[in-house]
Image (tube, rainbow, N blue to C red):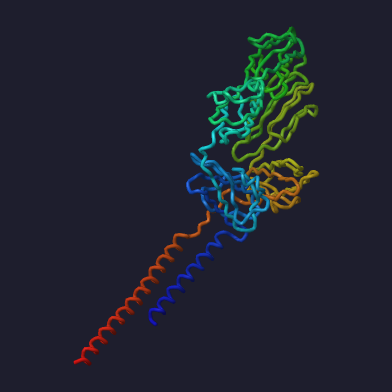
Amino acid sequence: MRSKRLLSIVLCIASLLSALLFTLHAKAVGEDEFVLDFSVNPENSGSFRVEIDGVEAMESTELAVKKGASVTVEAIPGEGYAFDHWVFTPPLPEITEQQRREAKLSFAMPEKNVSAEAYFSVSNDQYTVTIEENDGGMGNFGHKDFEPGKNVTVEAWGNEGYRFVCWEDLNGGLKGVELPEDWEKQISFSFSMPEKNVILAPQFEPNTYYVTLKIVGNGEARIADKEKNSAGKYEVVMGEVLELSALPGTDHVFVGWSVTNEASLVDYDQKEAAVVCPASDFELTATFASSIRSLTVKASEGGTVRPVPGVMNVGVGNVVPLTATPNEGYAFSHWECSSANGSFESFEDSDTNFTMPDEDCSVSAVFVKGGYRLTVTQTEGGEAKAKEGVYEMGDKVSLEAVALDGYVFSYWKCTVNGAVSDPKKAKTEIIIPGEDVKVTAVFVLKNVPTPVVTQTDQKKDDGFPWGILIVIFVVSAVVITLVILREQLNLSYRYLLGKSFESLKNKRKKK
């Protein structure tokens, strides 16, 4: 009886500890979070990587994931293996049979725990197609395994400013393979996978663009070491640096250089300058003028400005780029001009353009102390309505998000956590924190699950003390075993003792 009571006590303690640990585990996961665990089959045949809402998750076989979060899983085969399929427990209805055969897929975290198991198979009967990448472009994949006879389609595309020229078979893997006519010059072609590895390298060369040089006013302009073609233009490639020189005519002064199509000018207001060519045709203009006015550039306390503060000669109607940079503890507020005829492209932007009026004038960059700038943007699918500018800490600014047809408002994304009163409402407000802040209205296509808005990109680890639970069960099993052995030994001892007494008794009777 005493042994049975001891056994009951041990089992009760083990059960209570197990229940307590499971309760703690449930609390650690969270009410709106569920466990997502991973495994590979067979063991050590591959690995996996996981992204939660576009952020790579910490290395762990179990993750706590919020309901509705966007989950992207990718199976990575080990050496000698190839990915075969996924198995989800319980099954995910939105994952089709074809998707289960894809090494990388995405789904929304359901309102339940999910196990994802990646199955790999031995790839002795597979060969690899490798597409090399270079500075001019790349192919549609890097390395990929295919079974012999499988139809393979390769495609190349050039980087900005480059065009495709041809394919090179680096290891002769396509020799003897039936290929389309002039396959080397086709940006995309298909072939049947041979029983050997294939290494292909797409070749690219820079695109040719054209520069048109224009002159406004009385003067000359030249591009060093360049000759015009038959159309009177200069041939260039993306990134090429052109050295420029300007020579004013009689009674004229040089005003400046200007360009189109995102070409980048160096020393735009100097006779000797340079331009970096973009990936497009563009126009380059040298401007000379007889009507010159004085422009004085200033900056208030709390920041610096470019061009450097001082007086400069500018032709009437010419554009002067301006840049204001606040010091620490200050914020840029706006631009001011002494002339009502001078115009800014945007007087509220720290980087802007100023058009010179037909009179002497000055422009000033105004900075404020302790102010914080609010910047408002939006994703594709709608418009964010709010008044950008510089505010004091604690100021409240109204926000409104208006979705376009086919889209719905999702949430407000803010660089400062807690600044937006209600991130999920299209009409809300932001309370200006003690720093510059940017808020973005996020829109999504209709019928697309809304991503979970979290305060941090870090994903919580499971944290369940499986080791402690295992120790408890092992200790309990040892105790139970010892108790049972003790009972068996007691029974055996009593049995043998009884036999001895019975034998002794029989001997006495015989005597």
